[in-house]
Length: 150
Picture 1 (cartoon, helix red, strand yellow):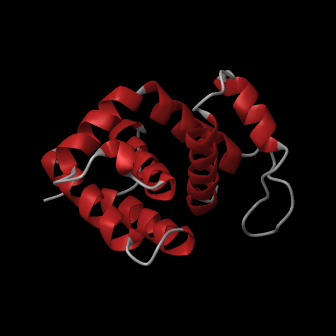
Picture 2 (picture 1 turned 180 degrees about the horizontal axis):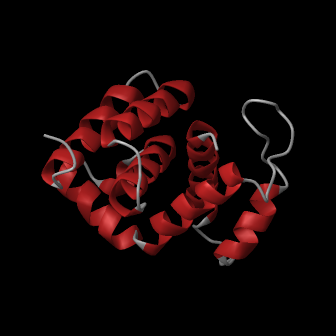
């Protein structure tokens, strides 16, 4: 399993979800089905194997993110200084949701520092010039507040 691929898939799905959630009442399973027809494996460019371990890990992150959405939003609100959650860029929001979900709710997850580093990479790859430092600051603050890192 390649968790980097899984995180990118989860990130892209959550970006898609935050785009579709306003004005759309599709169930999550329907969103996943629709999204699966558009997503490619970041390494090979081919369709992502929807029965493989990368896909399964990604979907578990997505499901945890949506299951704990209110709690994640509370953690984000506490971590945002002079900023409102609804003003966050969707790319930054998706990256933060993946990072927080994996750090807080995935059993036997890797080191929070590894997760944060990989989420920063996603923010650099897809976000604005300031996204990576913004995402790093928020994830680091939440990880410290939650006792995940010292």
